[in-house]
Length: 217
Image (cartoon, rainbow, N blue to C red; front, side, top):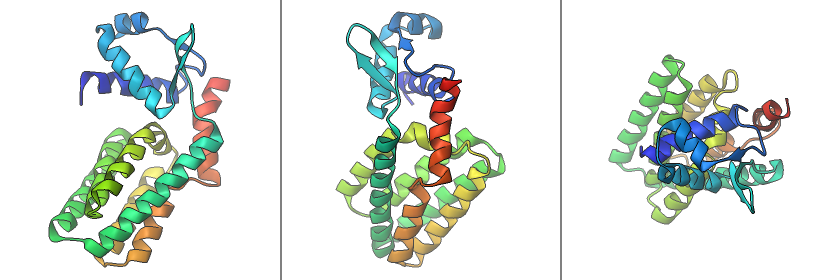
């Protein structure tokens, strides 16, 4: 992970936790002094955050803390769910031994992080798990697009994992995904991934509340 990526994650955590409220101005000089770095990695981190929608450039105000409107966030998760479903379906059809082994290894990594009840470690293993599914689709273009949107949604997917009991539920969903892909069940693999990613009902309410409620307070 680059210096700019580490800074991005630290600022991202403060945004999603509510420490940095919506509408707050992010001054490059102040952030550089606070983190003890030059403005260059700060600028790179803010650009990365802008790509996720957590930061927005405003005329005469510079970078400010932002967040996608709920309808846009829902639309992005819907698109992500369909991309992942397609990757799962193709992976079930095209699975090769090396990808099967990689899936089992990624699942084991998720189980180990879950056993430690470490949300951040689990998220890192979760990222590996999904990239393995993308690769197993054996469709490089689809994998590239899925990874791009996965990265854009990363702050919100990390936030979801902080919801009570989400880690064991996520792990159970991962196990179902691997079982379907290994069994060559395209329909079940696609549906398992779609359900795993899509946010609806209480899950979407929890996600929105996590983004806006701390700032409203």
